Image 1 (cartoon, rainbow, N blue to C red):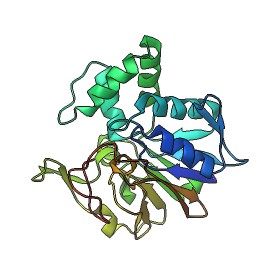
Image 2: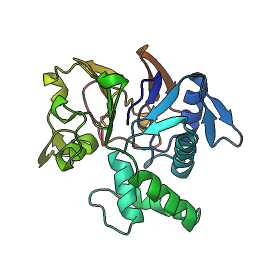
Image 3: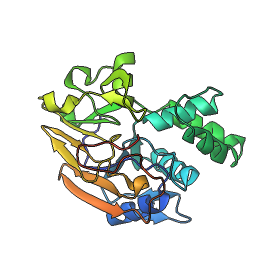
Length: 253
């Protein structure tokens, strides 16, 4: 998928529909009544970093808004690990270490079989990462090291969904991940989420914009190429993190 922008890259929504609607309005998008689509400012397009669902209060509404925006051409989206888990649940699979997708799947199915099929097809069609702006911008849910840019394979997809995992789990049960961004020297700006932090983290030519809205932080967007940040604080803590949000320190993800 090739596009030049300009873009409004939006961090992990996790069902925080109200904050998403406010963020889109702050970015200059016009929310179409009854609020499940949004029209962008001239020449711009939203890009969702994945994890549209789970843990927040309005998962179906968040999915519907993102799907409608994608259908209208107002938005693009990459897949996140929680979206992938929801897909597996909707397809009848079991997901280990993740009760939230079951709750989200019940919410989706409650809107009818047609809606559930649409959600499944939407997630199934999402790319693992996107390279934009002639190779100058890479979008991936959990980030992506340079050797995988523009390559699509099982190892690349796992990296995009979960980061550079070691295969081990820490004392809290979370996957242990290597800080891949510390060694990144690529020319492409890599924008990612997945790791909820109390503030945006820039390391080398990478930016993590997951500021933990569902954990009581904020929902953040990065304007590209301007590299301007726009954030909407969470109305409340929807899901208590196991660990406090802190720069460079992940809560549960």
